[in-house]
Length: 248
Ligand SMILES: [Mg+2]
Image 1 (cartoon, rainbow, N blue to C red):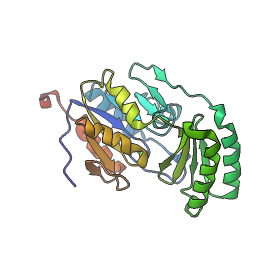
Image 2 (cartoon, rainbow, N blue to C red; image 1 turned 120 degrees about the horizontal axis):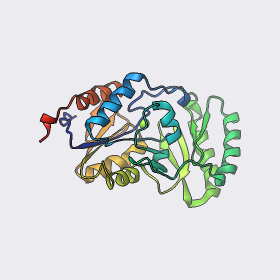
Image 3 (cartoon, helix red, strand yellow; image 1 turned 30 degrees about the vertical axis):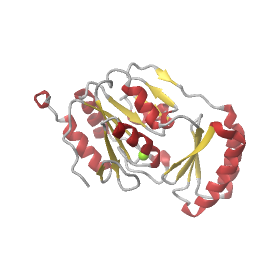
Image 4 (cartoon, rainbow, N blue to C red; image 1 turned 90 degrees about the vertical axis):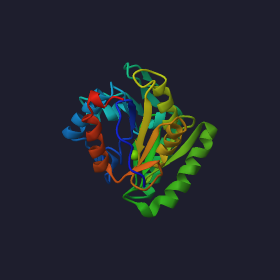
């Protein structure tokens, strides 16, 4: 794998969270951001003129709680929600009642498959099976049946030991594109770091625009690779340490 390009003050960063900034945990609710990570992210954001956004499958509400008191620009639910650098929120959290029948059906699904868990994010419903890998095929089949009556406006997003029912047409690539049209991101080179299948459209999008894609681990392919969340932090430290004299 190629050596990563030297960090630049001309970059803007788009960072996935789970599996990228923070190692995956057995339960999605055990996720914890340590103070060092928060400090590091705020330093990096400062160095890049505020052009750092979290691009996650989590809700923005969850990301704010996870990184408090830090409130970075963020895309949540794989692009369904987005908070611009100005603080304006698009697609703000609400509970999608069109998913109510699916909610009920998913509860029955969980009872049939001990170890599986649900993460109801209001506009999306994620079913995790990291603790019940043997149930993957059954969960996949059941969720497809649950999604069917919702028609083409919803689809199932694949992830690492997770399947998520979400509205179609929202992607991380779409969120990155929207950020790049606005200050402080516009005019900068987009760099996207992620670890999972939901990050791949974002990788291709930044690559097509002369940006940089960095895959964490070996689940997905980017132009460059970092081994794990610890390696991502090490890489972020180099950006935080950039000086204006490096400015080309
Ligand atoms: Mg991830």
